[in-house]
Each structure stands twice: as structure tokens, then as C-alpha cells.
Amino acid sequence: MAPVRSLTTLCLPGGLLILAGLILFRPGILPDAVQSYVQAYPYAVFGVGVVMGWYFNRSRIVFALVVLAMTGVALPRVGSDHAAVEGTSRALFLAVAALLPLNLAAFAMLKERGLFTTSGVSRLAAIATQVLVVDLTIRYEWNAPHEWLAYPLVDDWITAWTSLPQVSLAAFGLAAVLLVARCVLRRDPIDTGFLWALVSALAALQGIRWGWAPSLLLATGGLTLIWALLETTYRMAYYDELTGLPGRRALNEALLRVGSRYAVAMVDVDHFKRLNDVFGHDVGDQALRMVAGRLSGITGGGKPFRYGGEEFVVLFARASAAEALPHLEAARRAIADASFILRGPRRPRKKPATPSAPRGPQVTVALTVSIGLAEPDQRKGNASPQQVLRAADKALYRAKGAGRNRLMV
Image 1 (cartoon, rainbow, N blue to C red):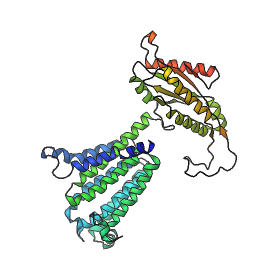
Image 2 (cartoon, one colour; image 1 turned 30 degrees about the horizontal axis):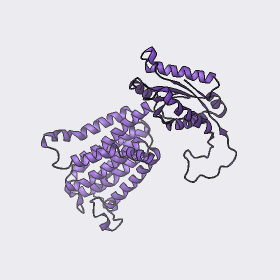
Image 3 (cartoon, rainbow, N blue to C red; image 1 turned 120 degrees about the vertical axis):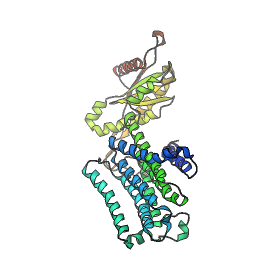
Image 4 (cartoon, helix red, strand yellow; image 1 turned 60 degrees about the vertical axis):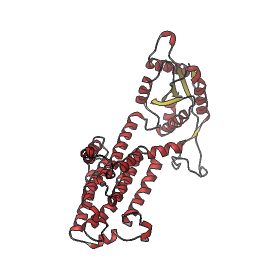
């Protein structure tokens, strides 16, 4: 199921937004009554996106939106003359078609350095320099750049399906390979947003030959970046960065949705402070990720959360404590049996397809967890979820007092 989830995350909602744009923004599809709103659509997207990117300190998205907006302003000046052999329109189209994918790939790969910093100013200057060079090239009719950008890389029949020059197609291909690789390796919504913005840019340039308004498709690409920003902000608020599990805020909201029949388990890593003191915080982080991975595979409908420190919570939203108990016991035994080898300085963070034999001495660490389990006591009325959580915490302390590595109800 993991590949299916990864593919769904990659395609939605960016692919759905691009598909909707391709369907709705074709000439003659939308009625005249909504055309005024359609014309305001790019301004709304780019304006809101720049403000949000600035507010959340996502300079890469701001600069990408600026590039998309500038492209949307430039392409209507191209018109149907972009297919001509010579002329200002052709030169402008060649420059935009080659620079746009390279700029999107570059801003996707750069690190966040803020807007009003030296790096931010230098990136804005890089955009301005490109505009100036293109303007001077057209103004003084320099032929060399025109010839470079129109240079045929392969036989013409291979690219007969598109009006884009082959250099531009090569730039789009290179940018697509880089962005797909980042999406697969990093699984970052921002990278996915940049990938779909690249797709929208290709559609906007290709659609000119059919009379499509490029600014509308470019704005849809900007919308995918805004969505990626919102998704990233949501993950930061609701998910723990270290373990990847939902965090305490997500737990509080999940507890508000439970009915009268549920169970809550508080899970604590035994002797975690000693582990940190002996091996260091990096090993402690490694241990927490291991425990989180085991809890993520818990059966019986349990959903794990990172509560804080070395504590986790597992919520069984539709099960009693008796029904949840065997699944928690199985998870506790799995963690106790899953000793892990300390990550050496040369050990990769992800398991390679063909692992090599370890070199030098290895240190193996065994972990155990103590678990406290509780459910609402129907004899004492309707207890609040926070009261049940506190009851699970008390059961956890009894488990620790009884010798650790056990479950108490």
C-alpha cells in the first residue's frame, strides 16, 4: 500500500487542479457571465500567494510566483507570431520557454534564505538580470542567443507534436527529472507543488497555439504552490517532525471526535534519560523513530501520536480496553524484541537495496516500553477524554513502578 499512497500524494491535489484548469480554461467553455471573475483569477492567485509566502517565510514560493506572474505578463505579447522564424515575438517566446523551467527547478532546489536577506536580494537580482538580458537581446537584435535557443537537437519529426523549441523541451525534461527525483526522495509537498507548477508552465506554453490564455494556466500552477504551502503549514502544526507521527494538537482534536466507547494507551520508553546520557541525543532520536515505526504498524485500529518527550499515545477510537489490550501487548513485545544497531558515522539513513557488510565493532541497544491503558468508566458517568488520558497516565506509572516493560490497565 505504501507505493499507492505515495502515488496518490504525488498526484493529488496538484494533478487534479491542473486537470481542472485544462478543462475549464479552454476557449468557449466558461460562459460570458463569469469572464470578469476569470480575468481576475491570476491577480488573486499571485497576490494571495506572494502574501502567504512572505508571511510564512517561504521565499522559494514567492520567487516562483513572481516568475510565473512575469511569464503570464510576457506571453500575451507573443501571440500567434511565436512560431515565426524571426521577429520580436519569436525571440521572446524562445527566451521564456527556455528560462521558465530552469527557474522553477532552481528555486525548488535552493534552500530557504528569507526574502529580505542578502540571499533573497541576490535571487531577486537574478530574476531582474534575466529580464534585462532578454530585453537587451531583443532591443539590439542580437542573433547569437536566438540561434542558441532555436538550435535543433534532434530531427524535427520527433518534436512535430509541439510548437516548443527543442532547447525548451530539453530544459523542461531536465527540470522534470530533478523535481520528480526530489519528490520521490524527500516527499515534501513544496517539491510536489513545484513539479505541478512545471506541468502548468508546459501546458501554458503549448496552449498558445490553440488560443488558450497562458496566464490562466500559469495561475493554476501558482495555485498548486499555494496548496503546497498550506499542506506544509498543516504538517508543521499537526505532525511531529522527528517521528512523522501526528502530534499533540492532532491528538486533542481526535479526542474531541471520539464517542462513548474508546480506549487510550500511554506509551513511555523505559530508561530513556539513561539512553540519552550514555549514547547521546542522536541515538535517543534514533530510538524514538524506531518506537514510532513499531507503533505505526499497530493492529486493531489503533492510531499512534507523539505526545512529547519519550511518550506516545495510542488511541483506539472504536474499541474497549479489553479489545485493545492484545494489540498493545503485541506492539510491546515487538519493540522489546527489536533491538537496533547504533547508526555509525558512515551508515546511510535509509536501508540500501544491497547493503554492504558492516565494518568495525557494532553496538546493539535493546529498548522496552511501559504502557498504561484506560477507557471511560461507564459506572461513574461520562468521563471526558482528558480524564481518560490522565487515567492512562496513572496506569503507566503503575507499570513503571511494577518493573517496567509491561502493560497496566
